Image 1 (cartoon, rainbow, N blue to C red):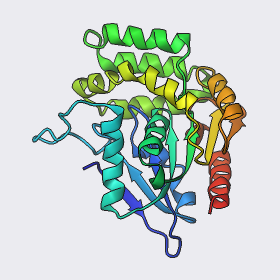
Image 2 (tube, rainbow, N blue to C red):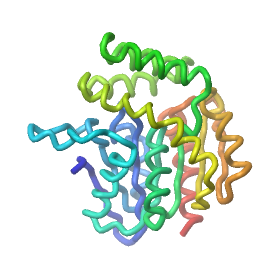
Image 3 (tube, rainbow, N blue to C red):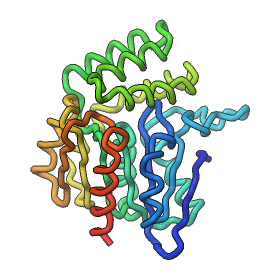
Length: 260
């Protein structure tokens, strides 16, 4: 089972589950914990191979990595904690996992908050992925990860987010990085399906105005999907919860409170 931490509220019955992105860990939510646990029960988890969810000597994570398999890891945790339903807050690739969970287990999802959401790969993103596939077994994974981080988060005000993700990625193994990178083979058809299928679960997209790779597609999605809305954060890039934590915390907590 994945490594996770819970913070239980004295009176609230509502849960918020945080899902980080590829190469990160639950530690990227360090600017959210104090505020969110004032209002909700909080679940922070490390995806397989990340943070403290390292493969054991028994190779518990040796099965093929697919979005469904990794999504089921999350469901296993909420089942173990007897959480019938939760709000889900994700960043970057974590938003794909949340959307996939909502597709497979809609009864478990109260609402979705999608920070730095990835719902379409533009031409530049797809070129990056193809380069990664070509060089993933030749170039040390950390070089590739630093390159990707710089392309996604290029500005001076993105530096904290960039360094945080690179620091967490150092804890991955090359073999683990390659397993996760192989997920790119199924990402395009999955995202195409997500864009076309309106799941009608309350969804807040919270995106940095400088998230130039992913923001344009989200603007289009919210025009056609019911129960979805978009907040664009000024002077902010891809990792909104790290770059603008006060704004992120205030707006997301208000949004979740309205869903009760």
